[in-house]
Length: 503
Ligand SMILES: C[S@@+](CC[C@H](N)C(=O)[O-])C[C@H]1O[C@@H](n2cnc3c(N)ncnc32)[C@H](O)[C@@H]1O
Image (cartoon, rainbow, N blue to C red; front, side):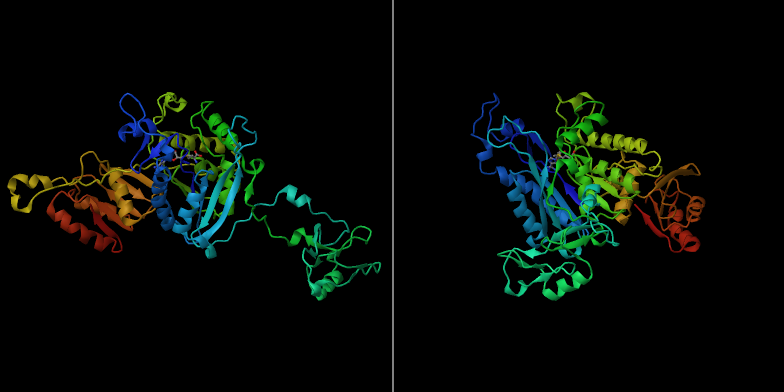
């Protein structure tokens, strides 16, 4: 599942560029709409003709990529307000296909009216839901609530248990379904009320009467209705397209939760309530070891919701949060509390929320995994070496001696190999020392890696003894050329199925 809560393009915050976010003041100055003295040169930017188009240009490639990342039975939920919902819907129709549209969910984001609103006071937002492939997606049912179950009673002590009566009439006249129904208990005859007809054919209803599935009211004189048994309804509730704040929380709840976690500081202005995302996880039919991706993570509410749900049902769901290192405003409470970027806020939220969930549910959550790894996008680990073949001479052979950038740590090289080989980035890693060299053992035998120099045959034999699926060294790490040549033979002899790589 993917959930995104992108900037809504409200016109008063940021101009979103693919490389960075800059504030409106800077953008206006750079684009010559304001001069150095701060005088605005152009009228309202919202009406400059590229307001929506800029936002859509930012969204479009991200939507495309999300579609590629989704599993065939996966879904994407996108939060948005009335300002861009129509444009976003069109963009999604194009990227995901109109036929994969599932729902436009309306979320009641607040309760109190905003009396200073110029026109209407907005109390809702939208959540667009698209499937990667509608035919592969089965909607997740919501757990039955006490309240929903309480609507089922057992007025006639039916041995099949509580039931609820539902209408037998159809709000349309069909001559074939205009027939007499007789209550066998007292012989009373019923015809459908004027302008309507019975919703089922005669033979069907007669069978249901025999089976005691038609209800004629406590005195046997009410219009017949169908008895629907609680034991026969679906094991959950089919989700509706309106999500009320009483069920999934509102903006105030989201804000309060983050405030509590950060000891009363308003560290993030627009967090969603975790319950809203929990509801999405349920309707997405999110398996208990599936992965959710949120690439506008903000304060990482999505991670919070995933850990919360895992704590409730012992799930092993994983999350991937992506957040631009957008700088916090220097006057913000977040900045004053020591958080330089929104990514810093998100990370700390996951730590604190995880600890809190563990504390609050200490009995159930003994094994709850609240750990996470942080990766930052960076340039290649490999040195860029530029030379003109004709001009190559002894003097510049040095260029090729060290091929890895000097500031890279062994961990950087390790994760490069993870990516090259397509190894799951969340596998457990053990860091140890063998013969004074740092060695990484990944998931017992998935991979063994050493990026230290001075590798000898004895050392290689020791690593081969672990019989890993993969083994990695630095290309320039071997003590001598003969060791380098022999490594392959040593592995072939001791553990022929190991894949060998040097970087
Ligand atoms: C509305 S917030 C998400 C809030 C989040 N759902 C929560 O509950 O905390 C939108 C996020 O998108 C990020 N963002 C803005 N422009 C972006 C861009 N061009 N690319 C990626 N992220 C961006 C912002 O830094 C912000 O954290």
